[in-house]
Amino acid sequence: MNIKLLAPLAALAAGTAMVSFTAPVAAEAHMDAAAPSLEDVLAHERRDDDRARDQYRNPAETLDFFGVEPTMTVAEYGPGGGWYTRVLAPYLMPAGQYIAFNQDSDGRSYNTRAQEARSKGWTENFKTSLAEGMGVEASEVMAFETDEMPEDVAGTVDRVLIFRSMHGLNIGNSADSVLKAARMMLKDDGMVGVVQHRAPEGASYDDYGARQRGYMRKQDVVAIFEANGFELAGESEINANPNDPANWEGGVWTLPPILRYGDQDRERYMAIGESDRMTLLFRKAD
Image 1 (cartoon, one colour):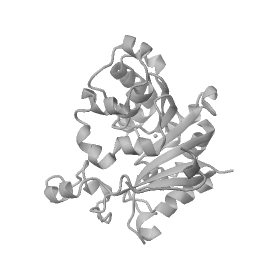
Image 2 (cartoon, one colour):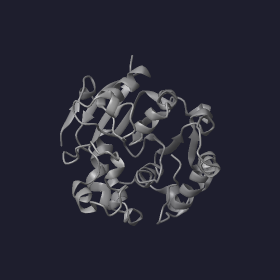
Image 3 (cartoon, one colour):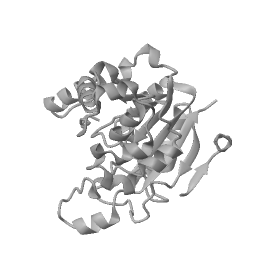
């Protein structure tokens, strides 16, 4: 595992698709449970359909690099289909706190009314779905849009996690508002963990900054964070995939799990696996 920590961190010892759970946890157990081990969470039957992606997403190593502990308060941006939610919520809810947040649905444009309805109904739908999966009341699930952050959340969050979403925030001009919210909710020593599809070394901004391929250049991600009051604290090659040239005409969606072109060259894309990804850790700048 290739990890680079930037001083002084080296001195120190977390969208409109709906999350779904397939194996509910009893509410009584949730109320009294001690902090679970990540190993047990990853091995749970609720993840039977998710586990094939562990080889590409490396959840144990990634959360360890981000310093996520089961007693922490952790906010996940844009949970989407819920792959990481099915790791984070069971890991955090018994002894810590899991928070989901999304961008302001009123500040977005929509192609259809159905898309708008899904987006604007995200908060309540997410709470209901996650509550059913965890065997708790919806009132126990914290989820909100950036413009509706509860006042008592400010300064309470240990980690904000952003998985494979920076390209969408960049293209949609939403990164500033999301990172402003992240900075507001973080503790003074809180950090933001980012996993993002990585553009090839030496890629131009015209090809990978202004164009929607799903990949981003590291320097562009860092620049966005620096403009919003953060500095790079560490980076890792945990989620690197040297087999991905990251130059697909159809973007990152050419590869699994999307497989944009269906059965066309499917074996080739499956052999490559999921995208090459950078794994970055940011802290508040002084």
